[in-house]
Length: 149
Ligand code: DQA
Image 1 (cartoon, helix red, strand yellow):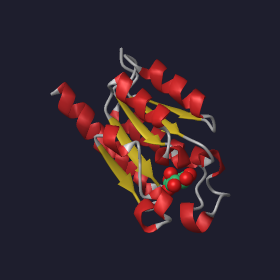
Image 2: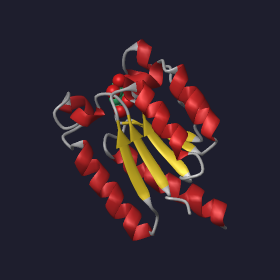
Image 3: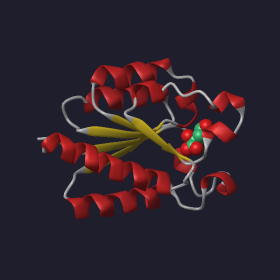
Image 4: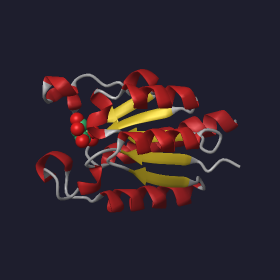
């Protein structure tokens, strides 16, 4: 039985709400996850959450998701820009991936303009703050429903 959607957050996203609020907003990761939880239960879709500041733990969690989840929503934080390991792990598990960023990475420093997650993602949502996660959830529901139909 699939457990639905796995939402993964990478380094420093545990500090949301306190970390550069002008850039990332005032909501904590717990609050963002609660909203997603509410949306998931209203849609009858399972959802689980994982955050880590450690690349290897993220790789482990992605590997374990194989056969368990229908879709991964991921904000890999700074690792998005340079982690070949995360890129490879997402590619290996063969589950549809939606990339999320709170900020618009393309209007920021040049080192944020490249994402190694994008090439293994179905699509991405960035620049809408916490709303990026909720938009990703809506896209995830459509993908899952499309697969069931
Ligand atoms: C981020 C953008 C990354 O460049 C940054 O390192 C983060 C957050 C975002 O959600 O906007 O940690 O992924």
